[in-house]
Amino acid sequence: MKKLDMNSLIKINKNFCEIRNNKLKSQLVSKGFGFNDNGVLKLDLFETFYLVENNKIKLELSKKDLQKICEKEIKDFNDKYLVFKDFRDKGYIIKDGAIFGFDFRIYEKSDKKHTHTKYVVDIKRTYKDTIIKVIKSERLANSINAKYILAIIDAENKIIKIKLERLI
Image (cartoon, rainbow, N blue to C red; front, side):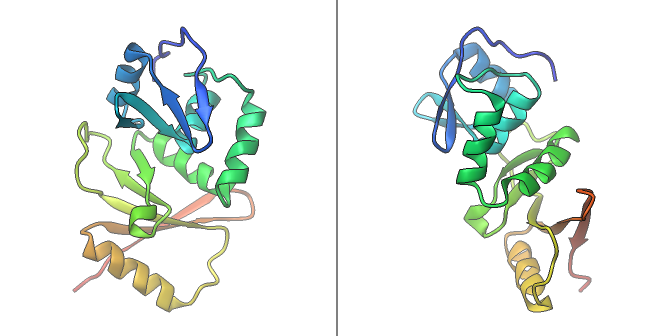
């Protein structure tokens, strides 16, 4: 990703980072970041942390302070961020999946407009839930015409991705 226009410091507002600079908004939208809210581009905390970590935007606060906010606001932020970063580094567009009961929704790299969700992802450090939970999650993914991915983070912080889909 090219260096983005960072002429002004950006404010964070609890769960979102608000971008008002038109040039920066345009650059971020073209890369699949954020959503428009009455002319203001809002980035979620994962997107904000990713952009700060990669020196693409500057905030009024330090990266360490931003991480504290993220950890306070998002349960298991560090594990979820590992998966977010992994997909984003590969060029996928990642959005919050809570609307469907998952951690993330994943869109293909080439999707420039908001199209249908390609994958939904649950993230676990270990997966001790019953097979019933996995079956329910896969059924829910299938009902919204998406593929279900279970991302498990092992003891070395490596991500194991398992895609589940029905054969029949």
